[in-house]
Image (cartoon, rainbow, N blue to C red; front, side, top):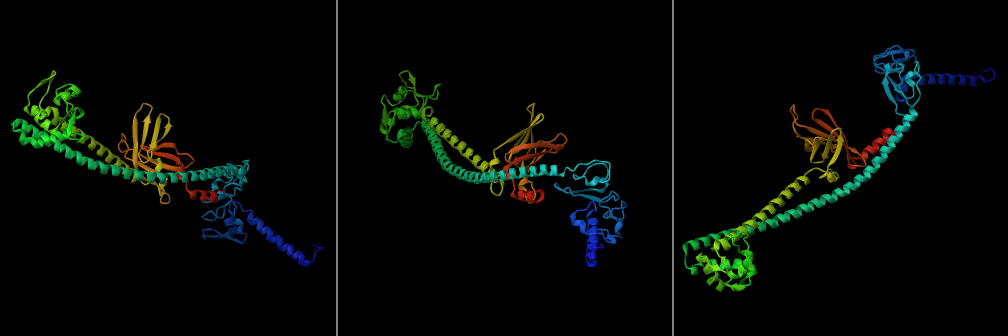
Length: 456
């Protein structure tokens, strides 16, 4: 300093004093940058909980003075203390101060073992590289998953519209069948009435002229094409020999009933075939025996209408069951954009040791052993996610009872992935199962933002 002016020497001295104080405060181990302002070298130090003021030289002197341990961030003196691992290049974190200089490397930058026999390597950069590669892979998966999710949303909207259109079509079919049902009920009632009238007429043996209405109705029933005459084909279609094993009229038998001709009008019918059949006599025609009218016509007509009615009733019942089933499916919550609709009617399997687990979303979960025994682990209950993402978990309830009581239940957690598959099954407690189900529709844009902020 002898060759410098006095004012310059003074400024250098002040700068050196300031720099030394700054360096000393920076050298205090075990504190994060956000807490360095509390550890500037002064004459005294205020415990961070405000409980005590101590001389600054007692900071990190390996003796615990503050109840909160804040005076010993870089030693293991305080039981409640914690040491901050800077871990440059990786994630910083805190460890209990009891682990400082214990011979075990806890911080990847080796800063916790500054005064021990342990030879710790700084592995932060390698760990950081691995984590950054993992995060980048997750980000790529998320980007691809979000693209696939958008496709599934579009498909879900179309599928929803198709289901709605299918429901409308089924409802129209049900309305048409309802009309047919009423018509067939009317026809059956009329056939039963004609049968009853004919039986009464035969039993009473009354004058045929009083039966003109019955004769006309019978003729019209036989006259399928309504051309005013009955033919061999029409007789074969409506008349059968009940006591014959085959119950089918041949063409010769039909011609015999028509008096040897191939067609017959109402007048001829009334005074020939009707007259013969009403008397109930057995007439031998070319070795054939003709039985009474009930066996040949009205009993069969009533049975015919009863059969037709049953068919329409069965069709009507089937359509109504389809409508009910479709309404139940459409009543399920498939997400805000129907993105989960594609999972309906799908099943996903995973083999774990001797068991095969099957998840059928919105239906049921089952477990099947190699012996072939299948057990229900629950039926679809509800969405059970968090308020921020209610579609992150599914609950399946009321499975088969356990041998110690209670029914089996399954909680399915949905995670983001580029494929839709069952990834994990566990039974953490008796008869309570958890599953990890991966699917693109579980990907959330908010996860991407959070990952960039906290991991990169």
